[in-house]
Image (cartoon, rainbow, N blue to C red; front, side, top):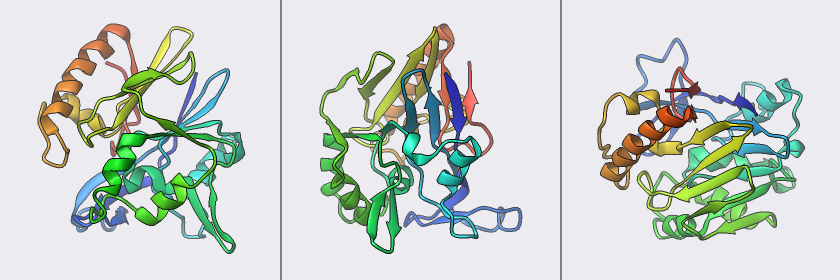
Length: 243
């Protein structure tokens, strides 16, 4: 497998979930929770797999950063075969849709997009929650290439498995990709930063912080035993770690 981090940048997220790009000039002055936004491309023999879609950030020239990062690797959005969404918060889905003069189009037109049905139901029951971008979400779920998931765990392909674990959101799902005796694990926002393995805390920002903490302890043990490569979506400095 080839693992390519697609870091849109480091950001500060306000209480109302407005994201500000962090720079050397404003890093110490902007208030809010500091985090990276970092989807991952996993290239296997059979698929180009995108793990979450980022926030759709644009650079100073108005070009989508995620697309630009892919092009640096000689990969076009059309090459992506699968987009696996852990949950539906705006910083994980907004990069899946692009606005054009003729309306909204999918950023990855040939990708099957995997969405957990119960996660969508939870989002729709929380219309006032600023963590969700309902304009993008409604466009996303209207696309023809959605694969609706409703099982607690299973396999998408021989290489890709998933489990609905909850924690950060009630029905957040995590993914394992296995090929040639190598295992990549994506714990999304239950394990977003390396520090979450150092300090065993239940975070109030999670729907069920205690559940997320217990999952991390379980994953940490298995990751050490089986030598997983752990992908960190929100770590300011790191992308992939191995215990």
